[in-house]
Length: 196
Image (cartoon, rainbow, N blue to C red):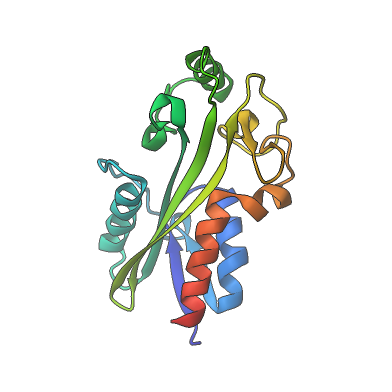
């Protein structure tokens, strides 16, 4: 494969690491927005992860029209709360630290016996051979009443993974990456790039 570049629309170093790890072996140079001195200042007006992921990718693609651009959108969906916080996961109680967000979610789930939840990620790739592509990954589990562990970030300490039999907050980065929503979407993306 000829040497290509993928610009990832994120300023999150954890994500950059994960994307580099998976895409570099395929012959891609993986660049971040920092390298182009670009800020991802775009309003996420979509009503789904897919729409918001595409909004971000298209926004950067307009600034860098000759580059392949990758963006993702993720969130926690809780069944009893009709999928809340969903696409608002990062924006929910935006000015408050995560431990306060956990408390609020646990409070809202009081009285519900079904605490089923899942994390969803949708990765968008634009400008790849003039196409727009999306890949979805989900991690299934439930919300715990008491946060466990200090690993990961965001809602990880209150999300108990069905596959790992522990919260993402207790899991090592390696364990989480083996079953996470982003890694599942990323594996689909890698599979596609290998074959196309």
